Length: 139
Image (cartoon, rainbow, N blue to C red; front, side, top):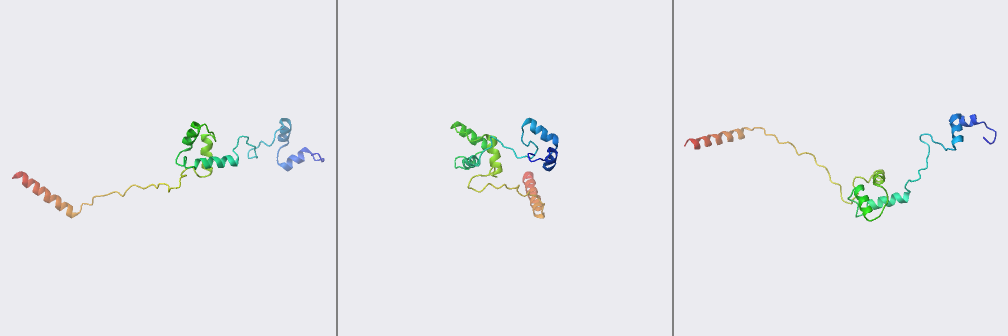
């Protein structure tokens, strides 16, 4: 705009309304539209994320949930991240399910249902038993 272009022409090129530009000028804001790149001041750095993953995968904590990890670290006066951040980072790294070196347990289904088919041999055995039983009672 300093080179002579009008605000309206610049806004058309940027695909924003002139009113949005005026509001930004007034409030001294940067782009606050949905999907715009934002600076998150408390976001973990990559080194902090790697330390969190390394801690969660360490021998001491690999079989524990993030809730338990944060509680144990708090007892030792160590703070890496909140419980929610542990869950979020481990979920992104797909390490929330199983972090140990062993094979994860496999779920087994229900056993096949057993059904009595009532074979002829079974019926004969029952009749023979009943006959002997009643014969022994009548004696």
